[in-house]
Image 1 (tube, one colour):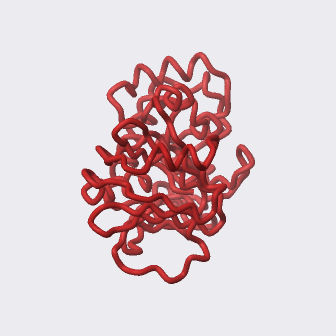
Image 2 (image 1 turned 120 degrees about the horizontal axis):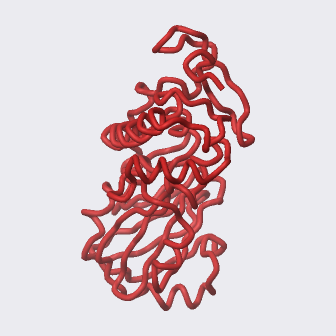
Length: 270
């Protein structure tokens, strides 16, 4: 599933192409892609609207229109891209936005888990999501205070989008390894020193991953079928049976929150 760096990569690729364009026609190839609103109401709300900005909130791509907002969640295999070229294979296309200047914005999704939401006010979405890990409010102090008041396993907490918006399986493994924290360690037992290390790891790894256009493990692509380049920087994710880059201990794969989780048993003692 695309995580914060991948979603931010898509946003940055689409923003200069979409700002100022008008949605002329919305074409629902697979109507269920629209969530929680009637299709006719959705179409009426977006057609004729100008795209004022394209931003990100957590794992959502936000299209800010004249009077409404669209939130696109890519889920497992979704891809959002713009082109003037004819698209002949519509097998996995779930929606098309026909926009001004003769271009089209396509939502392609092999597994059809991705969804498009319509919001009149983004406050509803904000209430569902936690703090942005690259936002000014995400400080070491905030993290220390919020780990102490919770008693949850660390990986479960980092994956909880109501706590911290944007992290997924890849980057949770990477930041916990960088900070030398076991994924099953309870949050209220993490020391202040390791909390500081975790805060630094989250900021550094996410920033570096965005600079590399994210990570492509299997499905993630963005404009013109480009892939992410952060794969070569991954230290533990999907590196089981390899040597830890820090101490040379063999990396193990365990289960945490029902997810395959990669750790160094020496660096990340429970």
